[in-house]
Image (cartoon, rainbow, N blue to C red; front, side):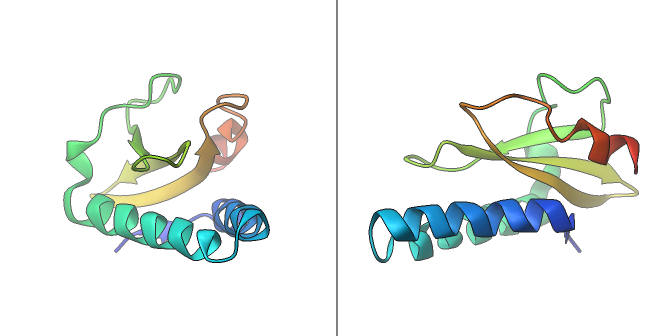
Length: 103
């Protein structure tokens, strides 16, 4: 079962709210893309590459489909993925590293 760090959950909701404010219905589309990607991570997390900036090999990155400039950074322990961040790809990388250290 996939787990989502509470801060990552807030990032998903913040992105949804931003897109919904840009155009009604766009926030819902963002959530559909996020849910779909979470389903794929849960089914086949090994299909995703190791995160390019993480120093821990258990951290992987799953990109959202276009047009969303986001990715999920997730940690895998005991075959269970934990989403650490819903990271915007055009912002500071690894801002969520403290979440990794607390795990």
